[in-house]
Image 1 (cartoon, rainbow, N blue to C red):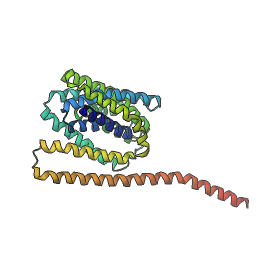
Image 2 (cartoon, rainbow, N blue to C red):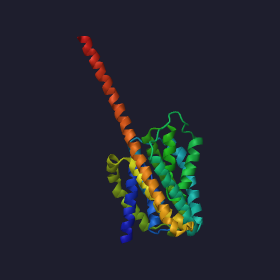
Image 3 (cartoon, rainbow, N blue to C red):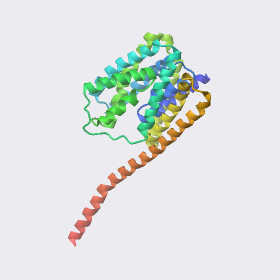
Image 4 (tube, one colour):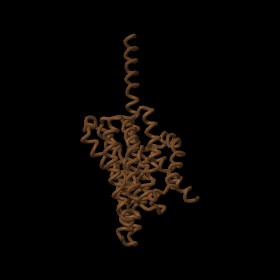
Length: 311
């Protein structure tokens, strides 16, 4: 019972992060499941089965709010499903000893990516690469494969690539990626079912993750209004890096005497990323304040000129 409660808290924490960032549900939940001792393939399988429910709910919500571009969804979901199925089959076929460092390495790299991504403002470039099949299909294939083999990664890989293209509004990017993830999660679950059998799914774990996620959904909607996504992204990126570093250090047979120095270096990098995230957030807010003030100032100058003309 205590373990199920912990897993429910894992699902709750993952949904809070995902609700505020629009990504990282799989990264957060898989990292925490590995941390509590769940086998890599079972962790990824359970997370993806839980995501079938959470992504379906998210997709319906985004559709009702008009946040979905169905052309993008269809072009990215099918190759994403193929990549996820292949990734699930690959992860199911390798041993736990081999899978642990592989999965930890992917999660570590994606956690480091989150640190870099949220340490600076993302500036969409208008006119950069259109959202065509030749762009969306390879993106979906890679994101799906990384998502299944790493236990997460669909959002961190697909969302920034679409945002940087500058051809789709941010809300449409997040809504389309979240909606397509339902197909990706279902395909990964089928792959794990074939590779591991029904015993590969830890159904109590799936139920606990799902319950925690459903409880966290309305809290996440409130959290995103008060906690800057930039700070939360840098914070969770550091947690993912430090947590998965332990598995990588063990797999690499690193001298235990060097472990504290490695952790200190990673922690220092985390602090630097948080400092840069705060600075980037301040610059973004100042730019918005300046942009908002400009029309008001222009209006005041116009009124002053009219008053002078009257006199």
